[in-house]
Image (tube, rainbow, N blue to C red; front, top):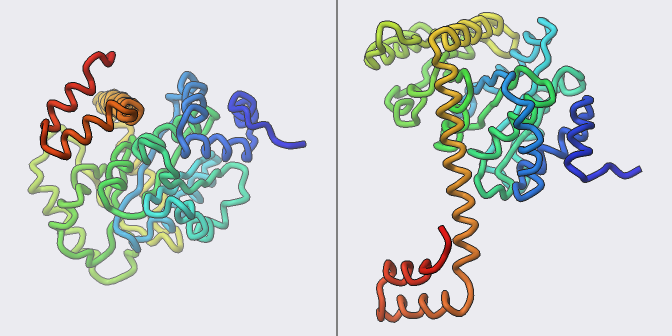
Length: 319
């Protein structure tokens, strides 16, 4: 029998653990449009209990291996986990789905683990909107620990990872010019630093570099100071220490009220982005037809300026 394509039916199945239904709902979210919005409406009232950990860092830092090691540690604690591997660079192929699943293949068939690669896939708001919607869906169906791994350190990746409850920045020994990290915005979003591949030379120098950068950031005395955790993800070394650091950050964020403030700010920013995208959709609808063509021609032949033409186009349009 063919699987239903109705989001209500799929959502009910997903709540009962149907992995195929979860995958289809995530596809709706990735594509956006009314089906994706409906999934968001179904998930939102049931979300809010999950905790999101973002992992970011330069390509080749070993984020996927580290994510795999964290999955193993969480499963040893009998915790269920979901993973979103974010790849904005491959909207047609679906991102790094094969690479991620090869690295995490030990967990792919574990019913307590759900792994999904995400790319923009035409969503008008891009990953900045699709990712929190996907996180809420996984939260709503009972996944209380959600890992969000980003492929690189571009603006999109840093933005997505920085929206997590705890953000882990992964570097390697001899990671290079620390100024580049500041440019990428990594220092601003890091709650925990990981020096992965710590079996290589240069760990002490990298730690000193990070500590110096933290000193220069002039953190308030009561602020959270990101710990620096060495790991060797390929054999799991340091995974438990990393998870302890994540737990310590969560405890501090909850006790200080920072977690509530961070989530409130994220909600406001997401709402602002949704409104902006809806207005862009509406603008595309408005900017068609004979009147649009006439005003465009008037601007092109310099008989009017673009601002006056825009005012004329918007005259009478309900805000």
